[in-house]
Image (cartoon, rainbow, N blue to C red):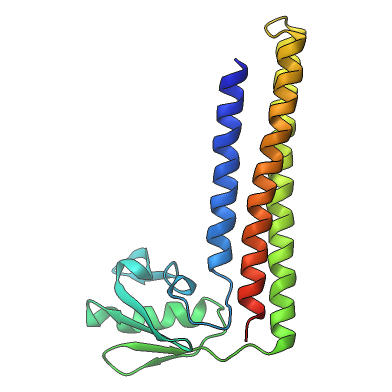
Length: 185
């Protein structure tokens, strides 16, 4: 029982961290990164599709992203989707590809972005603590029902705390790396 609870908890915590990591990719740094636009939803033939499924996306230099749709009929739809995605980018459509020029963020914008990253990290940590709390209640209930011994409960608590430390460290590392990337000029 205890092992199953801990396995499920670990899986849920890994999901939280990977979701946090994906969200971090969407935050603009000083360099062009294709992940900034690859999940933009494009209305194409009555379907909503991520841009990465309609086009080749590349970053030929640190200030430019090029989007080359495989079907040239999707060019206008892709441009509109990027424009409406609130990324602060102005797409330039030359009839063959879409060029996105990323202006270098000011130091003030960089500071705002690091605050956003910190807030996102705190949300992820809260989510992990909530998951831990749910598992801890489960373990306590099992002990009350005499399905776990007191030693198992203490062992479970110790392992839960170790897991929290491990995942908080992962979040901290991801946050620090993203903040360095943002602040790098």
